[in-house]
Amino acid sequence: MSATVIDGKAFAAKVRGQVAEHVARLKEEHGITPGLAVVLVGEDPASQVYVRSKGKMTVEVGMKSVEHKLDADTSEADLLSLINELNEDATIHGILVQLPLPDHLNEDLVINSIDPAKDVDGFHISNVGLLGTGQKSMVPCTPLGCLMMLRDHHGSLSGLDAVVIGRSNIVGKPMAQLLLGDSCTVTIAHSRTKDLADVVRRADVVVAAVGRPEMAPGDWIKPGATVIDVGINRIDAPERGEGKTRLVGDCHYESCAEVAGAITPVPGGVGPMTIACLLANTLTACSRANGLAEPEGLTA
Ligand code: NAD
Image (tube, rainbow, N blue to C red; front, top):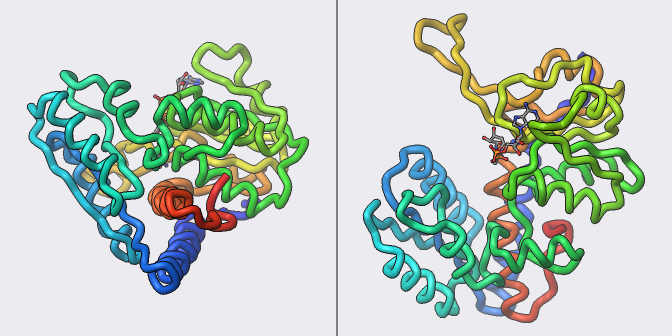
């Protein structure tokens, strides 16, 4: 194996440490405590786990954490009314509605009812437009985490050929916008892309966000390229015992690591950065709301 392993777990801990320092300063110098409200509708087990760890880490960096757990059959009107209350609440600087929502709720309507300045997931249509036009916005957490790791590894990304595999609104498209913002030449590949292997082979930077276990093998990777693997896929692992499973990314780690210059592992790569960036976004939102300087290095 020749690639440098980009340790997302350590990087995320560093980001959380920086956030905590800023929060302590905000409290001491301005008497302000950033607040994050997370809204969970229903009892999806995976969502419950995410919400719990978001709340725990919010408190750990010294922020106020508020959780609203609503029944699965909550009406759209009641959910919108709660979001409206949080929009008006001056102690809350970030609002996150955990997705997916139950089928009877219109996700776009709900997300677009959040005050864009408090939209720490960066999914509000205004933030999507601001990012697309290169203006100050709230940036989706997972692509922001990928960007931070890439900047840290490369310094400047200017002029690099980047291929993003996947065109989702939460990862692929915002990732492409961020790379474009850092002056990469960006290609977005997707399920209908012809000769995907050839497209990926041209990339200095590959960001894979597909959701297909170990789809990209090492012979798709240009020697020395940086591979950011966003995919989180659970596969059977009979070698670990009957009924056991393990997590893998969208890239075949062992073969990609042999040719890449740097690679993020799964788990322990992009995953931990997502919550760290949620906290960074909450801090950014709080700083902006109070007319204070934004935390350096923690925004796009
Ligand atoms: P999605 O299903 O919304 O989008 C997947 C994209 O992959 C689509 O745009 C599709 O065109 C593309 N695709 C599908 N098959 C393809 C193929 N054969 N070749 C090329 N492209 C193909 O998924 P998403 O929400 O963007 O998530 C992608 C992956 O990232 C998932 O594994 C998800 O679990 C993971 N994820 C991780 C984090 C994190 O915190 N690390 C956050 C979000 C998503």
